[in-house]
Length: 144
Image (cartoon, rainbow, N blue to C red; front, side, top):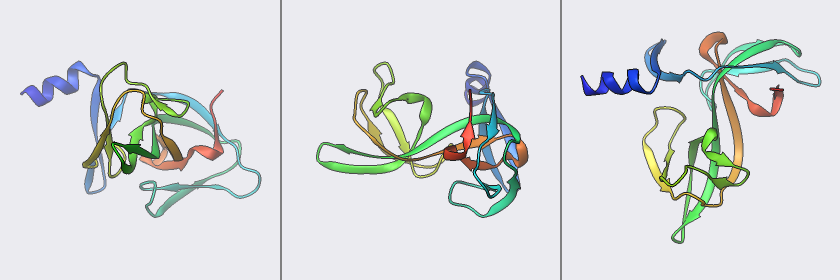
């Protein structure tokens, strides 16, 4: 019952995609595909297989943003995925709390924690879109 209360309290919903369950936050931003030539590939996960394509200029709804990062904490390098909303430029901005670094976006295991203010190097940013509940590279999406 406490688990369900957290979903209601923080506005989370459970979405069933194929055999796995992912969490979608009520983050919704209208954006446009911006490629110079080829269609933008939609992937099942940032490292997953291609599940579709979008033409340049196609409107998409972004429901979540995750960045693959690398950071040094106490002499140790941590590499993994963080919710992009907690990054300000190249620094962690959580208003004081530690930021969980995950093995994969959304539901991956926690591989480390970054204190507020930690400097990070962003390797890539991926966006979860409503179309096919797929992932696209943030390099080819324009959200103005």
